[in-house]
Length: 639
Image 1: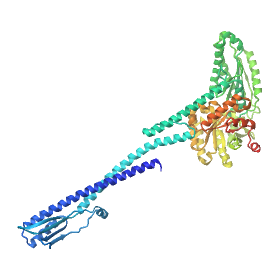
Image 2 (image 1 turned 180 degrees about the vertical axis):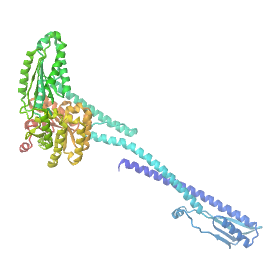
Image 3 (image 1 turned 120 degrees about the vertical axis):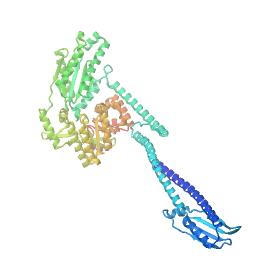
Image 4 (image 1 turned 90 degrees about the horizontal axis):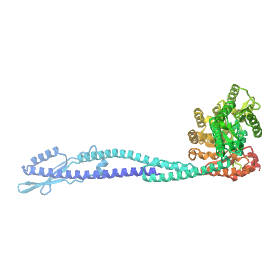
């Protein structure tokens, strides 16, 4: 039996005992009092009548008339007159029924009042004995009314007591629910804190739970901070705190092979001309300050245009990649303007900062892309101090040539419906975790991969419409196959209130399928919009969906309230898992990521896995699943 039921049972039993005790005491006291009053009345009336008869002539007719008058004017059950020898002279009896009082109550109370007796004198000798017994009907009615009044008042008091008890139970239940919810959250690796109740015992329990949550949360935060520090030490340039060459090129390669929104964007190179000469003229400290100022300008530009990365490729060359950005002229002009402002601070030293910028897209060769930029950068140096070369690189085999054509084609394709590709996510036993389902659209008569149209979907702000179409297709897909699917949500969709409400409505219309859907958003989206992401997690969890992060690095521990989001999985960025056997520093990072994820009850999945050997090593590092071009379920089973 639950504690709340026990409390209610205790309250009801106490009230019933109080009522029964009060009623018993009240009725017993009233009964005793009435019995005394009736006994005194009987005695007094018998003495008064006997005195009256003693003063009268003892004529039978006179005595009979006096008895009749007394009997008719009073409430008597019986009046008897007997002579000195006990012979009956006269007798009056009235057995009137007791009205307005239940028979069971009369039998239960049953007054026991002795009749009043008095001696009648005739001069100096005893004439006879008078016995008088009053009627009890009025006593029963009086006691019944008192009992009803007592029951009524007790009912009012009981109702007030029950309302007060309900309030007390509710005040007790609320912190109990918080304690239970907190315990369940900790069991799910969500370390939340609960408000402290006023009740001393419950407050002590909640305080202990809150201390536990805070201690574990602090421990996880410290581990995440250590992991991020390790990543920075391994991947970042110690002077400028931007990425080094190898980590940056790995991320660029991941973009070029991506089948998502990051598959296209802008890539820029900036060179600090004659760095050795600057070092001699300015000194080591001022030169380092110059490089830091340059990277800060590029980071600010990155923040304004997207969520790209800045890197130091070598001593004097800096690179910047901005996914989902496509306006070469605007970004190029902004870069040149910032470089000129920076150079103006060193006018006496003739600071030269040439730059080159181009557009990248899925399928391009990294070597070819960097080679073309390097050649353009050399040309920019010939133009002057802040020269710039923009490489106009139209997408190969462009499907359409104008914005209006692309919009019309995409609208028509979305009307026809979305086709889903299926790429498995497998665990260490080769069992299917879920299918990644990148979208395909029918354009110019063929089903085109996402890398061909997603840049234009992003440019034309059609991501919410595409994501809703993917969700509808995923619902039909899982209804037919019964298998779980993973759906990528774009950052723009999450900022669209209509998209979120429509997404929830579609899922609620198919609640039996919602548990098969795994939704994922980029790590940076959760970091930049924590409140919106938290709200989405809460809505999707209530429907039974699973929520996760993709393109995760060591920064996921810094997401606000990550311990309380209820994330079920994360997908580690392909730049960390690619060629894992050749990068021991990445192995340390991945081991730390999986440890931190498991401590939060989150499964870790590696993206971009290219071979079974690579997958085996990733599983040794603690990964729970793998996905990528080298992962196929049929080949896994065969081996």
